[in-house]
Amino acid sequence: MEIQLWREILEPYALAVDEMSVKFNHIIESYRKAGMYSPIEQVTGRVKTISSILEKAQKKNIPLESMEKSIEDIAGIRIICQFIDDIYKVVDLIRNRTDMQIISEKDYITHKKSSGYRSYHLIVTYTVETLYGPKTIHAEIQIRTLAMNFWATIEHSLQYKYKQNMPDVLRKRLHNAADAIVVLDDEMSSVRGEIMDAQNSFNIRANIVADILTNIQNLYKVANKREVVKIQDEFFRIYESEDLKQLERFNKELDIISEGYRAQSLR
Ligand code: 0O2
Image (tube, rainbow, N blue to C red; front, side, top):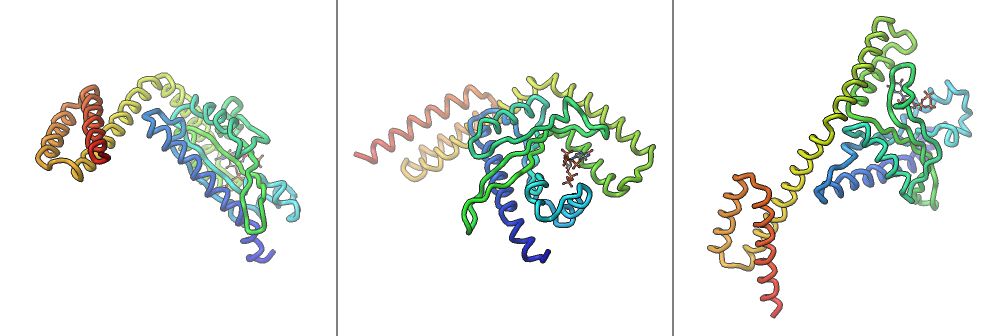
């Protein structure tokens, strides 16, 4: 097939990867802006390379005409979570969306692969708008923890290097590492509450500080400079004390002051 034709075929997949990445990143943003813990830590996406598509088609005896129907991971999204519980939250989150429909799922966490690979896979349909009208494509969403991703990335590179000829010693080591990753994920899950609390208060504090700074910036436009400098000094004092309650109270007071100026300007 000509390169130009491949480009045309792969275009909607690239668009789908871009759109889906934006949407999942937006979920992270929304959680963080609301001062809540995000079950999604990172999102990456890729379109399978032409050589990788051809390799898979050959391996599975797929004729090129039915490639789009039979190779379901031409568009791939990878969602990385901190904890195993988050993975199932993300699956539910996707299940409740109207812009992607799950058509199949593989839980390689409950049933890990013989290689030691663990991850949750979803195949979804997703519709993009192209120059020629809407096109519904398949996309694979892999959801895994940071630790699972670490293992899979290393193992994938070794698989690539050795193909079918990975030395037994190395294979054994990878199995041991996979077992260690299971223990690590379980250990992290047991301190999940503690970690989430710490991250939540970090996010809440960051949001309050952002609000205060916006308020102070706006006050510079309307209030007496000396008064704003006083407010700013007070903010630095509270900020350094690291007292979240005081910071919250200060933010509310600033809101009232800002509201007063807004009301004055409308008179
Ligand atoms: P790439 O380069 O990531 O795109 P098959 O692909 O034949 O194994 P199937 O049913 O198409 O079978 O998909 P499966 O088993 O759900 O796996 C699809 C993808 O999951 C793979 O894509 C890998 O990304 C990942 N994966 C599956 N098994 C392993 C494994 O043992 N180790 C690692 N590191 N990743 C795995 P591709 O197309 O193989 O590769």
